Length: 271
Ligand code: KIV
Image (cartoon, rainbow, N blue to C red; front, top):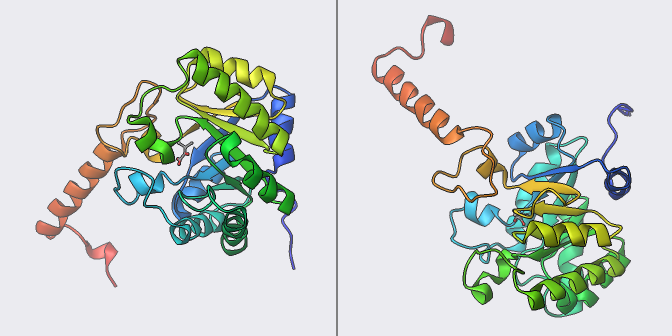
């Protein structure tokens, strides 16, 4: 068997080292093999197989319909596309908030069947025993606080979270509880930058922000959003690196025109 010694897989230790030496962590979501290859080659350290696949891949309004089977399907495709990046998978809504043994079984299934390297769970003290059990099983867990999309019907909207003192205090308590339970990182979504910076400084594990300012130890975006694929979606925190929707529409239009004009395939494009 030949082993490529030049490519070293990013692990939770690498992620912790990045925080220790104050180098920011780059995370993006990914849902399929082709984009995972490009993310890996582009140097992204963590690929999050987010349940945002429900929105950007499947067209649902919320992430709630995502199933364990859906997540395993996306995650295994992403794992096959990577050599270096660490692949973190969201446990979907309903798979881990209840009975501790159900949470454990869901976690083990994703790890066994997808080949991913870690999981992400939304929530704080309410699910801490379930997180502890998964971590004790040997599975790295990333927490997720602030705007947690699986609770969208409780929040009622996608607005900024923890602007009020009581919610900010709860978030700080949750972050410390996640660290104490053994999480290797915590995603902070859509909270004030000042609060995110304070939480990041108070934890020894890294924080990864989305809409949480540059005081976090790393950043994450939904890949379809940063590529400009999600037409019409432009929250304040989002930087669009491409306008792929426009580029694709142009390419599709050109293809249609070429086929109609019998300009494709040409002589060099046939056998
Ligand atoms: O599902 C997802 O893509 C996420 C990110 C927004 C952090 O949880």
